[in-house]
Amino acid sequence: QFLCFEGTMKRDHGWIHTLLSEAENERMHLLTFLELRQPGYIFRGFVLLGQGVFFNAFFLTYILSPQICHRFVGFLEEEAVITYTRCIENLDAGKLPAWRNLPAPQIAKNYWKLSNDAMIRDVLLVIRADEATHRQVNHKLADVGPNAPNPFLIQTTETQTPPSLNEQQEINTANKN
Image 1: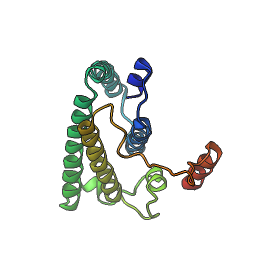
Image 2 (image 1 turned 120 degrees about the vertical axis):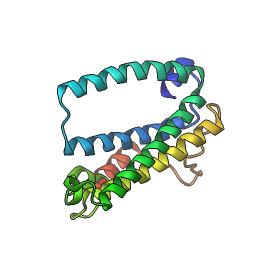
Image 3 (image 1 turned 60 degrees about the vertical axis):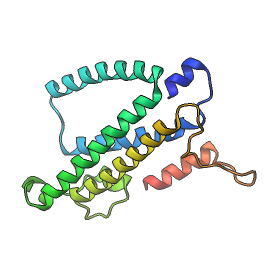
């Protein structure tokens, strides 16, 4: 959406806030799992190659139809929910013995405010909940279309003003601690 906004010089109707929030959340999913396992060079190379191909195809498709892209991402997120559900079921059934007593990475405890004794199962539960939210958001954004106001944007009244940049930084710092 941001790249389309930059290219067309039209208002994004507040979509950027939701999309950036979702991107940051997905970034935390990645960082959490990177704490558990560092991929090798060959795997990283294939990921970079895949990203290069996917980014270009997705970018061109987004220019033509943002709705198709949001619907596609909604379906990807549905598959993610199914995948995390299966992981949780397999963990509970004892099919993932290496994960049975695996503590949650500290980055996950901090980001999702998990307890100090949180385990990987707790992480899988919160990530699955995130993915379910992303699924709903992307399907809704596909439904409303690119020229509609962001239905997830919090409206403020004249007596309510959004936090200043300094206030937002203080909030972010407090949330990290």
